[in-house]
Length: 432
Ligand SMILES: [Zn+2]
Image (cartoon, rainbow, N blue to C red; front, top):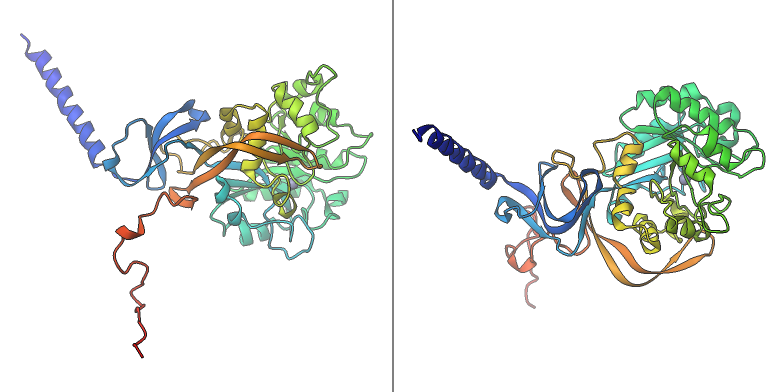
């Protein structure tokens, strides 16, 4: 009479044993143990373990058996987030042109990415359709950092300041065609630094973006009476397009009562995105602080990394994120604006999260408590009580930055001749 029920129970027991065996046999390459995981895409904000195998995220949950991993790294007291995505950098450093954004003012990606938790960088229009393939060959395809790009609407990109003023070389079709040929890395179109009174740089970029099916990012250049900023975000940009340098000096933010101006909330409501793009001089606390306190957070936090900004107030991605943290943006939202949201903005849904099966791009961050000073891009300073620091970075499962040597082995536990290759001999000089 009880036989069928018994059989079901027996089958369940067998199944349970099989599941447990699979667990015991699974070998993870790396287990990050006991960190506070912030993974906005999956709604995770809790202490959990993260296991990596074969370069992918293999498990995210509490209590993963450390015996199942080749390497166990204690990250207790630290935050574990998806690898950061910096939506606005300049890394076309290989042109040899002095003083150009696409030249000596750019940096090579790997020297600046992993040490700040960044695993993906988006070059914001340093190249245009005429020189993008050089950029790809000499930088993108050689970097360990995942480098994506927005094509400048100007054919020669930022090779000097001149091409971006040449409206005769803003070819929407050629730009869209080039984007189409390199869909694996081109994620947007850029208009930047335009000085003239016309909308042509913006509008051609939007035209190219529409044809190529990618978003447009606009650095508004000179703020002129003929083309006011409110019309950029209110009329010219499409939903999904990005206004970068959102806290540049001339952008108006709040009224006398500290209320965010209607044109901004209306632009956001219709889907226009606001990106930080801190840069050397494109960020002032004068507007950033009241806007952030009023809850008008950036959609995406980015650096506008170049040799000028990295040695100034901007410094790096974590310094830029820290500014929002100390002004009152919650850490979970700061992380979201640096991982999940930028991935969505560039339509790369496979990036910016720690879902099982995703490429294991991971940042392990520390929130330092203390007294810190912050500088904007125009001599303004601000005191803060916290600062983010990067303890570890993994790119596709490989440890690429390890500030406190968590992933190694105590040297006393290594074999007596570690560090000597097969081809080398230790030769002690004879006594005299
Ligand atoms: Zn820029």
